[in-house]
Length: 146
Length: 149
Image 1: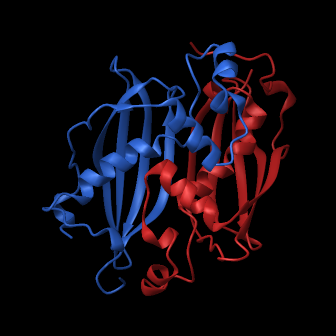
Image 2: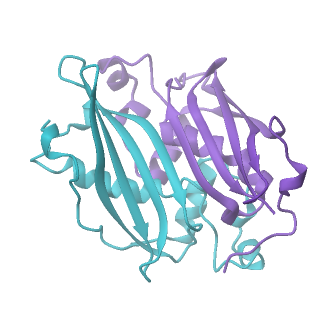
């Protein structure tokens, strides 16, 4: 069933520090409602200002899993083959506050952290920022190379 | 919350979850995917998949089902309002494809106290209809202590 596409990145062409993808995303409240429906996570702190305030949050927050889901997209585009994505992990270190009018802007940069030519795998490190500050820690993707 | 009961606690596999094509596309759009394999059945078939391919974090839907088992366990007594998602990991044996029928089984693999909070690590193992391993989702939940809540 699985395929190895001809465009898959090769281990030989990669070195630590190489940027493999970067992107910016604009999140508005509609994006949070859409993700709530898609994922089944209807925690009210992701769409109600009054509830968010009542539990001491600075505002309505993006789902951590939405940020995680978006952040890997530049790697998905670069790989071209979902079967080459072996593992993905993040720490949620800072909440993403989504303003009712202005939303929030996420920036993602995906950089090669390490390459293992022997097993043809690489670790891709993601830097994800909102309002200039990192929101994910130790965000790493392991990928299989050609 | 009764932390002593948590370590090693496990729950029976969830009812089979049938992965739908439109659910995959809905999830893909929600995470800003532009991958034709997730959005276009013809592109997915041309690449050798039976149907559209779910984005890497789609397994959270299965994890959500097991989390509900944990939250519904009266002996453990975790309240949703005290929960914060600390860490998340996915170990992916193969991509999820529309048409897959998946079940998920959760085991609590770690419990530790940290600054008045309890860090609970849960492994959710997802298998397909043939019993083959599809992914393991590992979630670390921070259960805020009464004083901090």
